[in-house]
Image (cartoon, rainbow, N blue to C red; front, top):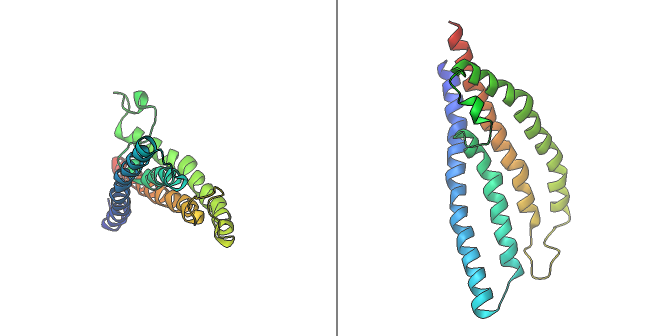
Length: 173
């Protein structure tokens, strides 16, 4: 593998690793918010729309911004019975990863990013907040996590494809 390519892959994977570790803290925040919300509802019979919305906002951020980290650590669902079978060589895995990334992951990520940008811009332009009384303002911030999360996923997909390409090129020699 060429040193420049190695550095590019390492830089992208650093971003995925860093963002995933940062987003992992949202799990703690979400647990604390849910515990507080449940305690307030059952102990004091006092509910909050804002807290309930914050719970699903944190949940959405966790999945959107954690997808690249999950891909980096091969945590996404695939047909492991075939992928990890004894007849599947490193070269075959690299071909599957390269073509899957090129023809499935990248087009899907690009489609989501491109189609979500007007959605976010519209939300920002109208200063969208929660339609519920007592709900959270600035809903456009949550919606902005869609293109951001898929951009991170796209970047990690590129790193995976470059790594697969290196495996394929190294096996030829």
